[in-house]
Structure formats: C-alpha cells, structure tokens
Image (cartoon, rainbow, N blue to C red):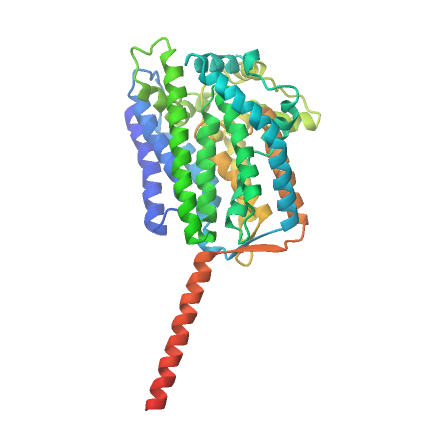
Length: 450
C-alpha cells in the first residue's frame, strides 16, 4: 500500500506538469514551479526505495491532501504570464538610490567574505561537515570564519533585502539605459549572501538563489532585447556551472563525514533532501498530536505583537516536538509547516485565503505590472519554490519578509515614472503594423493599375 501511495503522489505532480505544458506550449514561471515539485516527487520515490527509508505508515489520502493544497498555492504562479504584461512600471529615483545604497554597503562585507572563502578553501574538506553540524546545534561557526565587527552591520542589512537585490538587478538589465556600475554593485550584493552561505558550510543559499534568478529571468524574458537574452543565458550558464561545482564539493565533503557513507550512495542522500518533504508530511504531520499555534512560521510576528512565542533554534525544536509529538529535524514542506502551525482545517483555509490575496496582489492591471506587484510575486515564488523543504521565512528570517513587504508598500505609494516595455509584444505590433502597411500599399497599387 505504501508503494502505491508513493506512485500516486508521483503521478499527480507529473500529470499536472504535463497538462500545464500542453496547455501553455512554452516554459513559463509556472513550468518551473511544477518541474521542481515533480522532481521532488520523483526524488521522494527514489528515497522511499533507498536503504535510508524507514516509513511505515504512508497513505494515499495525505498525499492527495498535500497535492490539493499545492494546486491552490501554486495557482498565482501558474496564472502569471509575462506575455500578457505590456510593461513593468516603477519609480526611477527610488530604484536607482536603493540599488546604489545596497551595492555600496555590500562592498565591505564582500571583501571580507572573499577573504573567508580563501581561508575555507585552504582547510580540509571536512570543514564543511563541521560547519554544518555547528550551525544545526546552534553554535554558529568557528571564530576564524566570523565576520568582523565592521562588516557585520553592513551584512545584516544586505541579508535582510537579499530577495530584493535580484529584482533590482533584472530591472537594470531590462532597462533601455542600463547603468553598469549599479549592475556590478547589485551582483556584489547577491554574492555576499551566497558567499557567506558557503563559508557557513551550507548549500541551500546557492541552490535557491540559482532557482530564484532563473524565475526572475522567466518573468523578465519578454522584456529583454534579443542580444541581452543571449548574454544573460551565457553568463547564467557559467554562473550555474560554478554553483554546481561548489554544490558538489560541499555535498561530497558532508557526505564523506557520515557514519554510513560507505553503505549509502551520495544519490540517496541527495534524494533525501530533495524528496523527503512530502513523505515526512504523510508519515508525521498528518498524524501529529497537536499544533505549534503559529510558532513555527510566525513566531517573529507574534513577538512583535507581544504574544508569547519561541524563537531560538534548539529551543524551538524541543518545544515543537513536545507539542506535536513528531520529530523536528526533518523537512515537511512549507505547506506542512503551515499545517503544523494551525492544523489541517485552519491551515488549509489559511493557504486558500493567502493564495487568493497573492493572486489579486500580482495580477497585472491594464496589462501593467508595477514594482509592488513584482515584489509580492517574487516573494511568493521564493516561498513556493523552496517549499519542497520548509517555509523559508520561519523564525527570525521573517524580518526579511517584513522588510520586503514594507518596500513593496512604499513602491505602491510612489508615483511610477519609468516603464520597461515588453519587447515581444512591441516587436509583434511592429510586424503587424508593417504587414498592414504593406497590404495597404499593395491594395493602393492594384487600385491604380486597375
């Protein structure tokens, strides 16, 4: 019965992906979301059949429940079609000065992070496993790899707007009047978060940044000139190659330190991370004893409102395990984390309401998307795309979400004085006008001859 349930789970996600691709006939933002979850379902099946698997209670209904909620939360992403958006509008001064500010304050931490990376590269590869273990136990990192007191405040701010920098980068790339100094500064800002992630022995920052940048490319693809597209694809592939190399180095280093490394293949470990979310949801969250009452995903906001909450890493885990009677060191998907907080009924209702609001907040008005809409769309993409593992803005990371929402609100208040036109629509209109003009000339010529 367990194997049948796992197969049904895989069929659901792959069928949805195939249906969507047949319908839209192109690779869009929704295609990326569905591909990630289809891959995760396949990885889950691989993980289920590996020697690491210890599931005993997988059922069909929990998988169908999770899949139904996924269809609801992914709907705003599936509905987004950049081909239907004629222009993206924003306030030029706000984008320029914010980009400049982010870039300048990124320089000092970027220099120090580069120095720390050179130190890590000269250490034994086992350092990645040690750093990962220290982070999981709440110890942080070794003293030799900590940022200095000078860099820390700059890095703190850069990290809080790490999801905004790539958006500003693509606005600059798509702009008719590119500012290359701003582009370089924004790239430095993006480098900071990912470089520090490697220093900490992590892979998730690199992985999700690559996915996030690809998502932004799909959003802006129709707004980029043909030559710019070629350049973005070329440098994107080069960057992706570097990310894959670093990912493999960290993965192999951490894997080789596992006690069962000689018995388990590295692919099994990768399938565990990529595919365990839906299986763990089925095995544990579906049968949990109680809820975390909003403390998993929303402890930061509860604290702001002066409600009792638990925020510290290890303290959170112990507290959640007592309340729910399920382990807290594994992935449950971001939908699972919401269900942990509110239970099946209230959690499902919460996700339905949020999905409706996100759809309204990201819908282009008069074929025009403003920067506020764009920020909300990108935040939701980040949540959904990384959601095969966990809710990315849980705990103190909610500061990032709050900062981004405040910026989105500010953008909503400012007057939009600059627009980026959809190059595909513009070219199509030009071709149509040219065809009509030629037809008019031919008709006139035939009339004269007649």
